[in-house]
Image 1 (cartoon, rainbow, N blue to C red):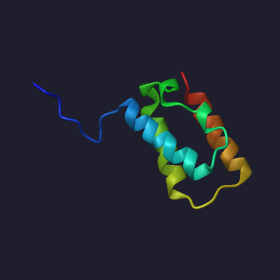
Image 2: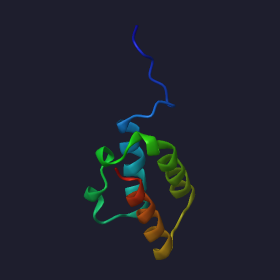
Image 3: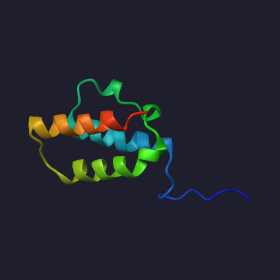
Image 4: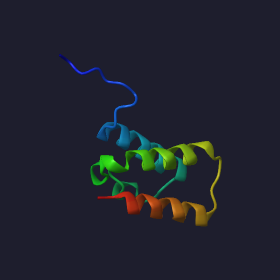
Length: 77
């Protein structure tokens, strides 16, 4: 039986998509340092919350960007 893929599945591909969105929105210079393979799927829900927050905002202060990048760093394996 083939497993049906749904949007609720937690995959490295989805992690990669969310990270790409975040990197683009924040215009992160060293975007290559943030890779999906470095994130544990156990942190998927946390990453999803950060993604939703970043995507809901139009602009960020330097302090907010630092906090987001720091949060992403804490989620890494």
